[in-house]
Length: 179
Image (cartoon, one colour):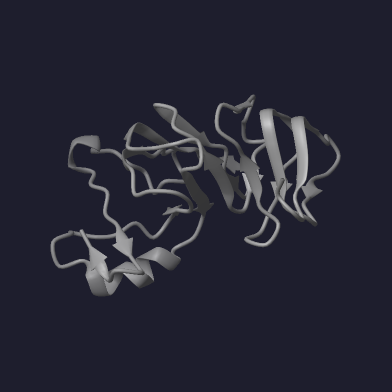
Protein backbone atom coordinates (compact mmCIF):
# COMPACT_ATOMS: atom_id res chain seq x y z
CA UNK A 1 0.00 0.00 0.00
CA UNK A 2 1.17 3.50 -0.75
CA UNK A 3 0.52 5.73 2.23
CA UNK A 4 -0.95 9.10 1.30
CA UNK A 5 -1.89 8.03 -2.23
CA UNK A 6 -5.39 7.68 -3.53
CA UNK A 7 -5.73 4.39 -5.43
CA UNK A 8 -8.06 3.98 -8.42
CA UNK A 9 -8.59 1.03 -10.71
CA UNK A 10 -9.93 3.32 -13.46
CA UNK A 11 -9.98 7.11 -13.56
CA UNK A 12 -12.13 9.00 -16.07
CA UNK A 13 -11.39 12.70 -16.56
CA UNK A 14 -14.62 14.30 -17.81
CA UNK A 15 -14.75 17.99 -16.83
CA UNK A 16 -15.95 19.89 -19.92
CA UNK A 17 -16.36 23.12 -17.95
CA UNK A 18 -13.22 22.92 -15.84
CA UNK A 19 -10.10 21.12 -14.78
CA UNK A 20 -9.06 18.69 -12.06
CA UNK A 21 -6.34 19.67 -9.58
CA UNK A 22 -4.85 16.85 -7.52
CA UNK A 23 -4.56 17.61 -3.80
CA UNK A 24 -3.05 14.18 -3.05
CA UNK A 25 -0.93 11.72 -5.00
CA UNK A 26 -3.09 9.44 -7.21
CA UNK A 27 -2.20 5.97 -8.52
CA UNK A 28 -4.18 4.36 -11.35
CA UNK A 29 -4.02 0.58 -11.77
CA UNK A 30 -5.87 -0.03 -15.06
CA UNK A 31 -6.80 3.00 -17.20
CA UNK A 32 -6.89 6.79 -17.19
CA UNK A 33 -9.48 7.91 -19.73
CA UNK A 34 -9.02 11.56 -20.77
CA UNK A 35 -12.37 12.72 -22.14
CA UNK A 36 -12.40 16.42 -21.27
CA UNK A 37 -10.50 18.70 -18.90
CA UNK A 38 -6.89 18.92 -17.79
CA UNK A 39 -5.40 17.22 -14.74
CA UNK A 40 -3.12 19.61 -12.84
CA UNK A 41 -0.39 17.84 -10.86
CA UNK A 42 2.73 18.73 -8.89
CA UNK A 43 5.74 16.85 -7.57
CA UNK A 44 3.90 16.43 -4.24
CA UNK A 45 0.57 15.52 -5.85
CA UNK A 46 1.70 13.25 -8.64
CA UNK A 47 -0.44 11.15 -11.00
CA UNK A 48 1.16 7.69 -11.25
CA UNK A 49 0.08 5.24 -13.95
CA UNK A 50 1.27 1.84 -12.71
CA UNK A 51 2.74 -1.05 -14.67
CA UNK A 52 0.28 -2.49 -17.18
CA UNK A 53 -2.13 0.45 -16.94
CA UNK A 54 -3.03 2.56 -19.97
CA UNK A 55 -3.85 6.17 -20.74
CA UNK A 56 -6.42 6.76 -23.49
CA UNK A 57 -8.16 9.53 -25.45
CA UNK A 58 -5.66 12.31 -24.73
CA UNK A 59 -6.00 15.41 -26.91
CA UNK A 60 -5.57 19.19 -26.75
CA UNK A 61 -8.61 19.41 -24.45
CA UNK A 62 -7.53 16.69 -22.00
CA UNK A 63 -4.08 15.72 -20.69
CA UNK A 64 -1.84 16.10 -17.61
CA UNK A 65 -0.58 19.63 -16.98
CA UNK A 66 2.35 18.94 -14.67
CA UNK A 67 4.51 15.92 -13.92
CA UNK A 68 3.21 12.39 -14.46
CA UNK A 69 4.87 9.14 -13.43
CA UNK A 70 4.74 5.89 -15.39
CA UNK A 71 5.80 2.61 -13.81
CA UNK A 72 6.52 -0.49 -15.77
CA UNK A 73 8.40 -2.69 -18.11
CA UNK A 74 6.33 -2.26 -21.27
CA UNK A 75 8.02 -1.80 -24.63
CA UNK A 76 6.18 1.54 -25.01
CA UNK A 77 5.23 4.00 -22.25
CA UNK A 78 3.50 7.20 -23.36
CA UNK A 79 3.25 10.14 -20.99
CA UNK A 80 -0.03 12.08 -21.47
CA UNK A 81 1.45 15.56 -20.92
CA UNK A 82 0.86 19.05 -22.28
CA UNK A 83 0.37 22.70 -21.40
CA UNK A 84 -1.50 25.78 -22.59
CA UNK A 85 -4.02 23.83 -24.68
CA UNK A 86 -1.40 21.67 -26.42
CA UNK A 87 -1.21 17.92 -25.87
CA UNK A 88 2.48 17.07 -26.34
CA UNK A 89 3.19 13.43 -25.47
CA UNK A 90 6.61 11.97 -24.87
CA UNK A 91 7.18 8.21 -25.02
CA UNK A 92 9.77 5.68 -23.94
CA UNK A 93 10.41 2.88 -26.44
CA UNK A 94 12.45 -0.33 -26.45
CA UNK A 95 13.11 -0.30 -22.73
CA UNK A 96 15.61 -2.87 -21.49
CA UNK A 97 16.39 -3.87 -17.92
CA UNK A 98 13.08 -2.74 -16.45
CA UNK A 99 10.72 -4.20 -13.86
CA UNK A 100 7.18 -3.31 -12.82
CA UNK A 101 8.74 -1.02 -10.18
CA UNK A 102 10.84 0.94 -12.70
CA UNK A 103 9.56 4.48 -12.80
CA UNK A 104 9.98 7.56 -14.95
CA UNK A 105 8.57 11.05 -14.35
CA UNK A 106 8.02 13.41 -17.27
CA UNK A 107 6.63 16.89 -17.80
CA UNK A 108 6.17 19.15 -20.84
CA UNK A 109 7.03 22.86 -20.81
CA UNK A 110 5.80 25.34 -23.38
CA UNK A 111 8.49 27.93 -22.71
CA UNK A 112 12.05 28.98 -23.50
CA UNK A 113 13.50 28.19 -20.07
CA UNK A 114 15.52 25.26 -21.39
CA UNK A 115 17.14 27.46 -24.02
CA UNK A 116 18.54 29.56 -21.17
CA UNK A 117 19.81 26.45 -19.37
CA UNK A 118 21.11 24.89 -22.56
CA UNK A 119 22.91 28.03 -23.78
CA UNK A 120 25.95 27.25 -21.65
CA UNK A 121 25.98 23.64 -22.87
CA UNK A 122 25.58 23.90 -26.62
CA UNK A 123 29.09 23.91 -28.13
CA UNK A 124 28.11 21.30 -30.73
CA UNK A 125 24.58 22.53 -31.43
CA UNK A 126 23.65 25.22 -33.92
CA UNK A 127 20.81 26.44 -31.69
CA UNK A 128 18.50 25.25 -28.93
CA UNK A 129 14.71 25.54 -29.17
CA UNK A 130 13.26 28.48 -27.34
CA UNK A 131 9.71 27.15 -27.73
CA UNK A 132 9.37 23.99 -25.69
CA UNK A 133 11.06 21.15 -23.87
CA UNK A 134 10.31 18.05 -21.81
CA UNK A 135 11.89 16.65 -18.67
CA UNK A 136 12.31 12.89 -18.23
CA UNK A 137 13.78 11.46 -15.04
CA UNK A 138 14.17 7.95 -13.65
CA UNK A 139 12.30 7.45 -10.41
CA UNK A 140 12.49 3.91 -9.18
CA UNK A 141 14.30 0.62 -9.39
CA UNK A 142 17.26 0.08 -11.71
CA UNK A 143 18.86 2.11 -14.47
CA UNK A 144 17.06 0.97 -17.61
CA UNK A 145 17.93 2.05 -21.11
CA UNK A 146 15.25 3.32 -23.47
CA UNK A 147 14.77 5.43 -26.58
CA UNK A 148 12.77 8.64 -26.18
CA UNK A 149 10.19 9.72 -28.75
CA UNK A 150 9.18 13.40 -28.81
CA UNK A 151 6.40 15.14 -30.71
CA UNK A 152 6.12 18.48 -32.45
CA UNK A 153 3.32 20.56 -33.90
CA UNK A 154 3.30 23.79 -35.88
CA UNK A 155 3.28 26.58 -34.85
CA UNK A 156 3.93 25.59 -31.21
CA UNK A 157 7.23 23.89 -32.04
CA UNK A 158 8.83 26.92 -33.72
CA UNK A 159 8.14 25.65 -37.21
CA UNK A 160 10.15 22.43 -37.50
CA UNK A 161 10.76 22.29 -41.25
CA UNK A 162 13.95 20.25 -41.66
CA UNK A 163 13.31 17.05 -39.75
CA UNK A 164 16.50 15.43 -41.06
CA UNK A 165 18.63 18.09 -39.31
CA UNK A 166 16.72 18.00 -36.03
CA UNK A 167 18.73 16.75 -33.05
CA UNK A 168 17.76 16.01 -29.50
CA UNK A 169 20.04 16.90 -26.64
CA UNK A 170 20.00 16.27 -22.94
CA UNK A 171 21.29 17.75 -19.72
CA UNK A 172 21.86 15.51 -16.73
CA UNK A 173 21.55 17.87 -13.76
CA UNK A 174 22.69 15.17 -11.34
CA UNK A 175 25.77 14.02 -13.24
CA UNK A 176 26.52 17.34 -14.94
CA UNK A 177 26.70 15.79 -18.39
CA UNK A 178 25.25 16.99 -21.61
CA UNK A 179 25.16 15.54 -25.07
